[in-house]
Length: 236
Image (cartoon, rainbow, N blue to C red; front, side, top):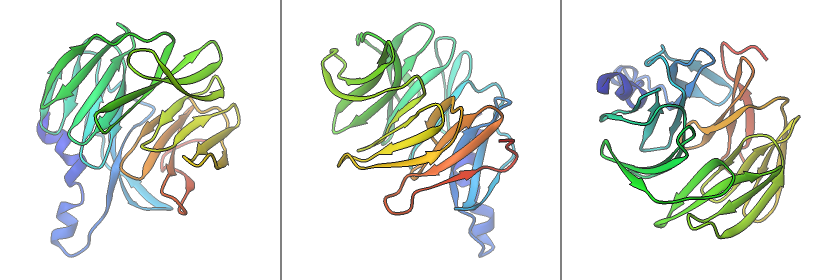
């Protein structure tokens, strides 16, 4: 499994050796539950071969890619036994915090080990942001989404929305019934027309992946380069 996950980081190596470098942008979980690397450049993407099947959730950053099957956490460096069901990931460098949706437990992942955390927050956990040794968690209470600390203290309000939410390093990406909303730290917003978003995850360092039915989209989140793309093989 280690070799398979490493493909996500080194998919462009062979082409680079030939003098033709194909950027590897991250990975997505396709509608069949297969983890697939995303390569190419904005507006000209292609998906690599399915590397792992039975993936319930996944997240990738510049340095780390984790995938959750029913019973394991998979990484390029190995695998770890984990509680059943899907997970929410918060990535920071080589470390991560996970929330297991079925058991409602938090854990810290480091070098293929899981350490239980005694965090307890009210509401449905949607996303986790890590940075500077601190954690913030997006939770939905009724229809309202808040940002809280692990001790439950409220630090921000996001929106009244029933759609998915992703906490970025400084910003927030969330879905309404017919739009994606990218809210910057300075409170400015960009909106992209998209109906029926079901999940939003980190696809890589500069992209978020959004699944809507049988379609998967990539949203470029870099400042001044924002754009929404339909990934190959998707049916909008």
